[in-house]
Amino acid sequence: MSRSIRYLLASFCLSACSSSPTSEWKSEDYSLSKTNSRIVEITDIDTPEPSKLENGLRVVSVNVDSGTPRQLENPVRPITKGPVLSNADLIFQAKEVLNNLFPDLSFRLQGNQRSKLFDYVSFQQTFMERDIVGAEVTLRLDRSGQWLSLRSSLIQNGKLEAINFPTQFRELAADKIPFGHQIFGSQEVIYPKLGESGFDFYVSKMFQIYNPQAQRAYQIWMDQASGEIVGTYIPEDLFEDDMLLSVQGSIAPDRPEQSLLEEFLPFVTFKVGNSKYQADLFGKFDFKNLLGEKALLTLENPYLSVVDNKGLNNEMQLTFSEDLRDSLVQFDDHSSPEERNIYYWVMKARSYLSENLEFNAMNRQIVAMANFGLDLDNAFFDPLLYTLAFGAGKSVFKNTAMARDIILHEFFHSVTHEIYGIKINYEFSAMNEAFSDYFAATITGDPMIGNGAMIGNVPYLRTVKNTYQYDTFFEGKYFHRDGQLFSGALWDLRESLGHEKADRLIHEARLARGSNIREFYRDLRMADEANEDGDPLTYSKNARTIREAFNKHGLHSQARFEQVTDPFKSVFGPKSSCWGNELPEVTN
Image (cartoon, rainbow, N blue to C red; front, side, top):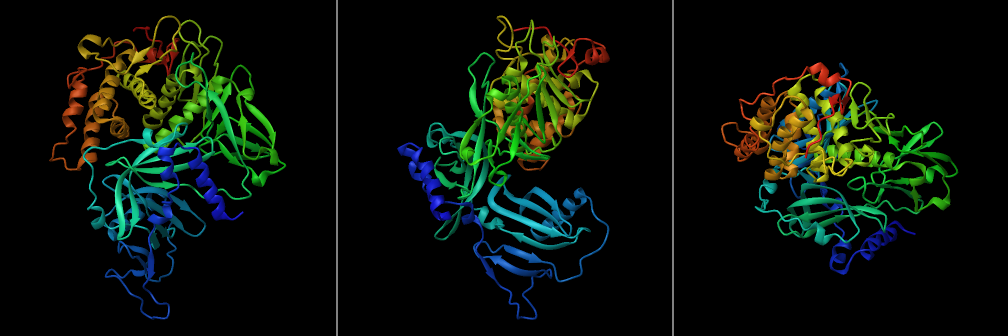
């Protein structure tokens, strides 16, 4: 079967699973290749003196549509054999090259790779803080940082400045995407679409979609002015020898007592001898090169390992054979619900960090333990052992591993630790709890923390949606409780600015590592100013919103989180829990 026929079949599977009003766009073919440059060679290998730019760079090829150089090379010279630069210095050198060559363009670092001979640094072109789909540049440098060549699909600012940014965005994804499809992520981008007279540019929302019935992942780009689909992308990876299986398990979608929901388990590990292989984001794994091999399927990957202290073994033995082609591997009988729930929600949080906040510093494995200890009636993150622990519950909590917001809360303690390290400071401890509450709530969209996880008639433990005032609420005894003043301000900011902008600003401000609320407020204002126009002399349109969010909770310049309790007792006391905090009084 030819490659083109298989591609058409993949397109047909996606169309067949959709309802009639949305089937038309499924058959359109706006692949990413159409956004790439059409190149014309302007140098002749028989010409002694090739065309040159004013700065002496030799132009190898140029983009016909934009006029932007597609490929540049430095004049021929010996490769410098100087000292080897560190990764940080290498990236700095690459940024300097781009600033000199393209001073009017904006870029976001994609990554760098080191080989035995050269270093390669890649950047994504951006405009108005939005990625431009298909517009990228890669630099090749020697080990001393001297750049040797550049390849790009860049677009000149002159064309981009004609983009009509809509004043009101429309998101109609729910109406356009067929029932049963899953949205795994979205991002605001600029989508170039090739027309009769060149590229048109659309301020779009890029959605990552999964079709469970066809077992295919793809992307759509939706114009945010009209809500219409302007492009779709179906990867052409269905080859005749592909042997794919999918790993699925049931998790708790909301609160512990609700019915379990089947979900695909991302990045699970297949152990084959001394080698390890990972499934993809959608739990899919191609085993065509492992036929006949025996494997152990486990809930782990380079960033997370989940265990159940009840002694349950979360391993599944299988032998790769033709019978597993296009099969669905159900992992429920080989793992506990607690393990699967921890694994799914931690990986969801990691995906959020990477895709929404572009934070990729969590690059070591964390161990998460279900049913920790005999009497643990709580959950905690241990920064010294780099572990998450979830108790089975006793008199206050139900099994904490079955509550998504508790899992997310504890994981985000590890994120805060990655940024700040350990700080023995009551005010920062309250901020620490507030950060975990806020980011758990922003992922779930539910401001109640411990929702449904409490024994008895207590509906939740804390809430980030509150009207608590510093003058009347603050006690200085339990920083879980006092932290709600800070998390309440962050949530008010989210409701005013929208979760995407608020999440990014709050995360950005954390990176400055302010250890009290006053410092964080200044860092937040600075991040907001930089996000607007970068001019400190102009007033950001969000400045009043930020000030009002904090003032609403009495967090003004005179607010002080006085240390009432002994900091070492409250952090390392015998009742320590949730990263060394005393269990707060349960209040409504």
